[in-house]
Each structure stands twice: as C-alpha cells, then as structure tokens.
Image (cartoon, rainbow over all chains, first blue to last red; front, side, top):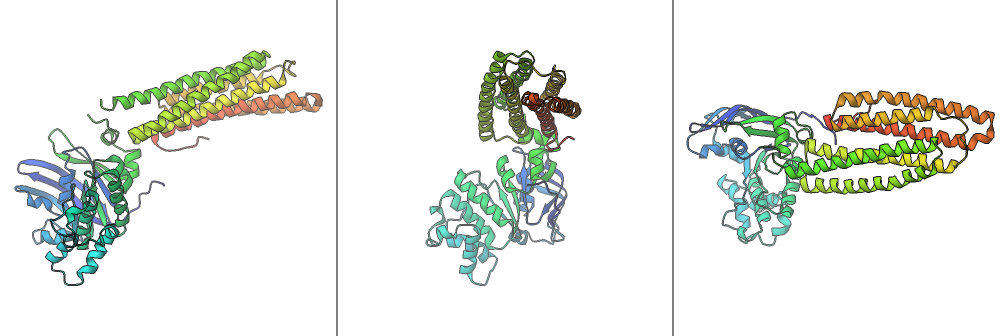
Length: 261
Length: 217
C-alpha cells in the first residue's frame, strides 16, 4: 500500500464551524472536507469535541438547548444550517448509529421498517427491510426470526440492526459514534468489515477512541484537541496512513502514541 | 509521562542492540587479527561468539514481536521497533561475515600467507569505522551522519578491487598460490559486505527519522 493523496468528490464541506453550548465554546472554526465514499475517522481525547462535530453533520445538536452554530456545513450545494432546511430531511440523508445499540422495543422487522414508515414510504416494505438487513450483514442471522423482539439479539447483532435501521431509508452519509465501544472483539470485527463494504455506497464518518480501529477502517483521519479553554480545534487532517505513521504535528504524534499528558 | 513500561521496553531493545554491536565489532577485529597472526584459537573464539549474537538476535526478535502485539505501537514507536528488527538483522549478518573470515582462516591453516596483509587490515579498519558511525547515527537518529557514513563505502570498494587485482596477478605468476589467494579474495569480499551492511543501517536510520525508505548511493 502506498500513500495516495487521491482527490475524491466532497460530500460534506465544513467551513469555519464553531459550536457553542450556551456561553461555552465547544468547537472553534473547524474547516474540513469529508470526501464521498470514503471513511473519515474523527479522533482525539475525551472532551475534544469530536462527538459534537459528528452531531453537527445531521443537526443532532439542535436537540440540545442553547446550542449555537457559526459557520457552515455544505451538503449537496446547500448549507444544512440555513433556515429553510428541515433537519428531519437532513437526518434522513445523513443517518447515525450510536455508541450503545439502541433498538426500539419492537420486532426486528419493525425496527428496520420504522424509518420508512415515518418517512411515509409507500412501496414493498418486505423488500426494503430485507435489503437493509442484507446490507448490514444481519440477514442470514435473523431471516427466520424477523418478528422476534430486537432485544433478543446479541449486542453486536443489535448494533448491526441499528445500522440496518439507518440504511433502510437510503441515506448518503452514515455517522458512527463509537459504534463498537460496547462490543466484544468478534462483534467489532463484523462492524468494521461492514464499514469496509458500505463505503462503496455511502460516505462514512466514524468517531472512535480505538486508534487501531481508526487505522484499520478509515481513509482519512482528523485529529481534534481541546486547549486550556476546553474548546476543540482541528489539529491535523490527512490520509489515515500518514496520520498513523508520520503525522505532521507533535500533538498528533503524542496522542496516537499514548504520550499525551 | 505515560507509557513508562513501554518506553522501558524500547530502551531494553536498544541496550540489546548496543551489546550486539560490541560483540560483532570484536568479532570483525578478532577475525582479521586471527588471520594476520595465524591464530587458530582466536578464529575458533570468533566462531563461538556468533552463537551468542544469534541468541541475542532471537531474544530481541521475540521481545519486539510481543511489543508489537501487546502495545500496538504507532508512528515513531512503530518505526523504532521495525528499525530495531532491521538493525539487529544487519548486525547479525555482519557477525556471520566475521565468522566466515575466521572459518576461512582455519581452512588456510597454519601455513604462511602468500603476501603481507596491507589492504585487508585497512578494509577492516574502514568497515569498523563505518559501523561505529552508522550505529552512532542510528542511536542519535542523526540523518546527516547517516548520509556521510556511506561515503566511506566507496573507499572500501576501491580497496577490495585493489586486493582482488593484486591476488589475481599473484595467481597468474604462481598458480600454486591459487587456493590461498582465492581464500583471501573471499575475505576481502566479506569485509566489503560488512561495509555494505553499515550502509543499510544508515538507510534504516533515515527511515527511522523520516518514515521514508531511501537507498543511499
């Protein structure tokens, strides 16, 4: 493998993005390009703002009170923070999977069909549910028990069900917030394999604390760090290979080699 | 500073490298000395030392592999371990060449040499100088010194060519000298290869410093 600086189409363009929770500035002037059909990893110590940044991509921060956003995130030539934009529509295009598997207390089938229903999908539900479960590599394990409660699945299966739920509504981008931190190594490998397969069709952004996972699954890596004022900044973004072998900034080297004090 | 245990383990790898360097240096010096002095006992000692070098190499390899598995090093840490593995391999091969010189000396046996040794001891001296400097460059991650070490390699090559030419002439004049002359050519070849291995260590140093593999001409 050689270091390539291949230029891909930009899926999401972040321009001078700052985020405030009340008077507290959580992120300061972040600018980055998220490339299409690539996996971008966001890394950094706890509290550096990487999850805040991830939530900005589908306006999940809107759900927190007193949140203020400055700057822009351009998706499909529009600023997703412009007033005319419906956040629900954004979330249907930019789906999210969380740290802990959070299936609904419903059947496996209904979990996957849920997003389709609330988006008013009229069509063949069975086909769409099957497609999403195949895409999330869960179909073979659940095809004979689609009407069992989702809680009967293992943690790793529940997380892939959450992936299926996100995939059912055919998003362009998938946001993964530490998707394997609650899973065992075998379930983790399945999710990572899935990410590798899904990037052919989707743009993926993943927040992870696991350096080796970021190195394994992502094409680009962004390192965020908060300073004394606890405000998160983008220190360095580059190809994953560059970041994990010869990063340009000392802070990045210190963090990834665990010499961060 | 976090990762103290890991840093200590990295230092221990370095200490092993330094021990092996001293051993190999002694092997090279003694192998040529045994040739000059027709000292079969010293040749045998050099051959025994090679087992010690191999043991250190095996031990370091195991430790380095376990460190990669347990610590999952990245960036400079990873390059440090990879470079350690490369350097120990180069040193071990240098030891093999010295052992080879000692074995050739045993084959020549206790007969007199067909010519006084001048260029071969010079080659040995220059090879050792190269080895010391490249190991210093490696220890201090000194790219400039690493690059300068390699210039001496050309001088060693010139000496080797001179030794071969001289021995060819001796063989042409007196075919009965062919056996020993061929052995001495092998020795010159071994010393030249020792110098080449120092060049490799210099290249490893550049990799350690920059992450780029580069061959020095």
